[in-house]
Image 1: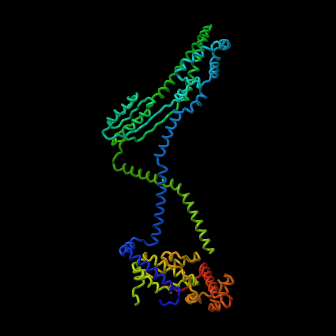
Image 2: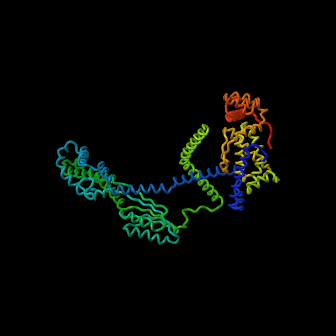
Image 3: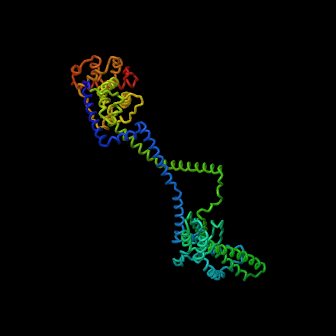
Length: 389
Length: 195
């Protein structure tokens, strides 16, 4: 090079050295790979944009995955069914809430007396005051035999042993299960379902079948065998959906029991009043009242019996279906409807993806903002330092 | 034996034969240095930019494709890009040199005058005298002596009562500042067009 600038001469030496280093590198990797490498490489600017685009796509995909993960319906369902069974066991097992419920609803002796006074007051005017003291003893004994089998706990909670206290919690349990069985197995599975019901002391309440491949059954199973029944039903085939709900009717049960007790008291009181009544007018009026009370007693007893039945026996709804049985009404297979359905499905899918990406961005954007802020500060500090030096 | 290949051929050949790039450098290094010197008015910056431009061209020679653009024009494209960055940031980084393992070199003292010789100060003398007013007194005095009175560095140093190296530095820094300022005002420093 014909220059007398020393810097350029040195630069030439540096470049020659760099070229020599590169040449040995090329030889080492072989000439063929060198040419491959060249064809694979994109121009720098395009690589730059490619990197940005790839980064953006990766960011959105990450956002979408996070969105899908957080929105996964399975998770939420599992969580709710979990709380269902938790509620069931918490109430049924420990009965921790039961005493509180009883405290508010169970009649303590004082309130019973008050109620009796009220019931009596309007019916038998001023003369009743003299009768009342005599009535108290037979009234107490009358209560005792009735309450014994309905809800002894309601009378006096503290006298009862712990095991009986647990039995006080009344829970109506409901189960729903949807089972898919292999094609041709419907008949056998149907027999299995009814066998499960009968073997556990229950029965098939209703049953409907269609085309010998789908059917719905309502089973009544003794409450104690409910979990066993659900377990055995799950084993029949592939479980598509299953739900267990528990309704705590303890408070209602205690309410009704207390009401019954008051009504019985009242009836006894009215009867004894009738026995001591002197005028026919009084006797007639008391008879009407007794009849009315008796009616209410029967109604309450009926409600209590219904509750007891519901608690004693759980209901399980079973849906049984062969794998390839048509689900409800089959879609028409003409071109038009299927195209619109495809568009609808595509739109749903699009919205789902966009929704997931938005949810994911909610997670990622703050993180990215923090990262960007840190990066900005670092660059600023570096620039300042460089400018200072 | 002189290499008879064209610039484009040399650039394409340098992919598999890195030595070919050195030939390209030999042909154009001084022109590029002048190109930078006339635009930055500063020998240090011009030298740095020349080194950085060739380093970057060497590092990315694989991406050059012959689309009818002369190989040298491609290198000047990189040069323009580097120059733009210098005017924006007021400094030259060494990223391309680092990438290919080239050292950063100081400008030897005797090169300052030689590079200044490449700059034709005549067309910019008027603009300079205005720009000079914005410099520090030290830099302004050094620049006046060197650029307007066209004194040699030993004389400049003599008049200022400082060392020669110090005088060079003052002139260099002053020139860089002026060049950046003129660029900011949109003033054209050179009128000629390169290859």
